[in-house]
Image 1: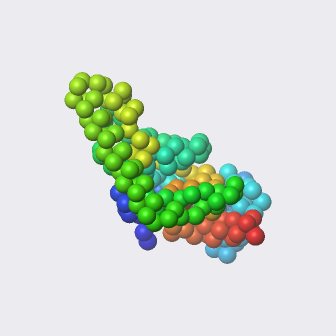
Image 2: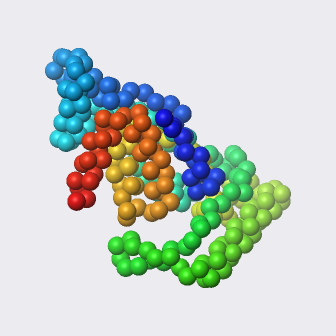
Image 3: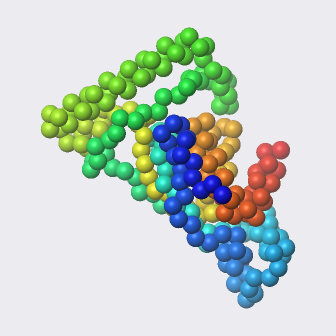
Length: 224
């Protein structure tokens, strides 16, 4: 069972630090409505299937994941749009930021209106990536200079690009996690956040295999 992925976008990672509940907790929460405890595994699996298929999703709130995540700021800002969960992020007001930036291996050009992309020609790609890397270096040097001149961290940080890495803790129940995965595993989601969604999905599969199996079947049915 792999409960962390420490090689997402180079220095980025997603790690499970705590977990409560599971498929059994979903069944337990659902059966209290009718005053019955756990029964056979087959009936419990069918119940989980019934709950998801019929959108009776509150029992899934009794399974909770706590993740530690490191990702570029622009990925985090997409992530924080998922509001039915809890976040605590490193603060650039209180902490001097590290010189860690996300540099893509290849840049994408938009192809059409439906989030379809194509890779930029290799020579142009390499030249643009060098320019981006130079800009990162200049921005971080300015950040250091501002700090050395006595500028407060909360002001000095304004020169740092969105490609800077941030860290946060994310506590999310299984219901909200499935909502996140349904949106961020979609081919229309940005490639960078999909890498994190795939890592989170693997942990979801390992810890809640019944729920994951049905969730994936339903996702495939919606996209068919």
